[in-house]
Image (tube, rainbow, N blue to C red; front, side, top):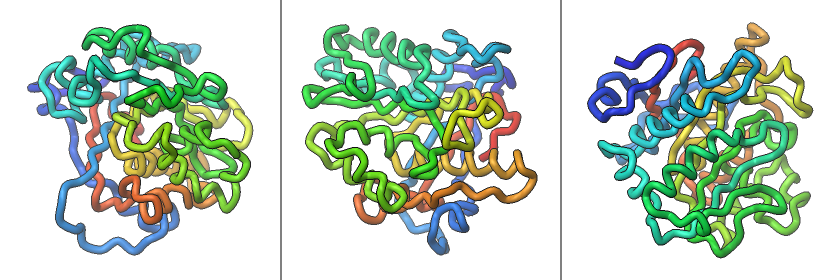
Length: 295
């Protein structure tokens, strides 16, 4: 069984304690446009949500040990492998030049998350000189053969939410142009040569997300104490959106729709073909601390 304060890391205990389910159809209502009927045949995009009740201290600092355990549990759950090195090798080769694309605005990626990733990359044989980390001026460049997309989760005044899809906007040369029409064209960035086909994992730092902007008001930050992981950026963002929407509704005690509408998630599916936002095609795996999971 999964302990309330943390997670087990063995394959047997993971299978015993994880909860599987298809994403709630609430996303087919006002959150993401679409009329969802019977689930189509075919595999589902797996998104793993891991939480730990002591991932943050009382003053909201990240606990490095808890974060490392969460990262391991998420990757085991996503990969289906029995040990963590095999899980990482499923996505990253020792020969890869790896870019860890973080975020620095509003809810910066916690260094404890990045450090835990680097430890595992080095463990499977990726040389330190082949690991590039950063955002904005330090965005990992076109020399990278593999990208790990590691943003902090937040509500965003221009796109509704900012998670996996929006995190690559710094690869674009004309950033303001992507803010038009509620950032609907963000998915096009994923087809740029520096990015296209390189993303191996989306690892969302949801330790302390922001559920209302446009500025960082502490009353809208909450200790979700989670990591959200998947290979499909659209499915990952769909899950992130549901969590933020559920938190907003709980905070107000009534529906409080994310604004602006999440056009970039819908277009990333329908126009740019980066993945699925169809809740019938998303399998959510929940691991760890269950209080206020919100999904």
